[in-house]
Length: 187
Image 1 (cartoon, rainbow, N blue to C red):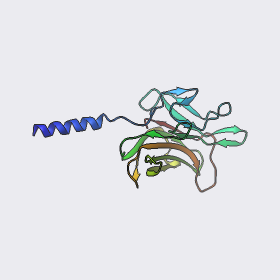
Image 2 (spheres, rainbow, N blue to C red; image 1 turned 180 degrees about the horizontal axis):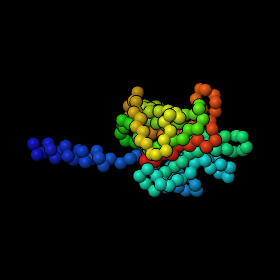
Image 3 (tube, one colour; image 1 turned 135 degrees about the vertical axis):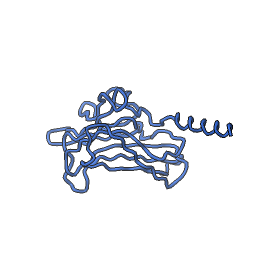
Image 4 (tube, helix red, strand yellow; image 1 turned 90 degrees about the vertical axis):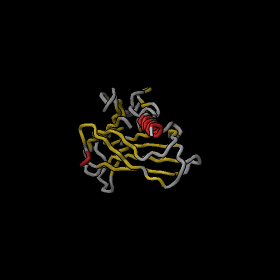
């Protein structure tokens, strides 16, 4: 009985201490105004709609991704992905059941949508799992709110994951609005 209890307690401790595989998941580390281990839609010298903000949900900083402008009358949608400059994701070694993160959201336009997406691939680069959720204006929040998105598997042995966040237009065709934004922390 004692041996079984010890095994259960060690298993719970191991589960509770599992490491988060998402690099720079709290957006604390930045180099040249870019979040380390993430690719953003910022264009050096032209637009910086993705910035480090403080305070974060449960840390010093978070990331803010705002619809901006690259020229008068030309809006520019923010995009953020957990990839290197070659488009490679980060390594994973287990099947995760969901992706969670904290967000603040301010969608101004009627047809805007904030999307969170996870794609997992096997060693051959084939897709094995996906998670996606759209957030509309009624999901807007001025305080950090937790999102939990279930991951659906249609293959086996994931070894790499990519996470992306973006604001886009829905099928309404009304476009995106300058000033809409999302903030993300603790992915």
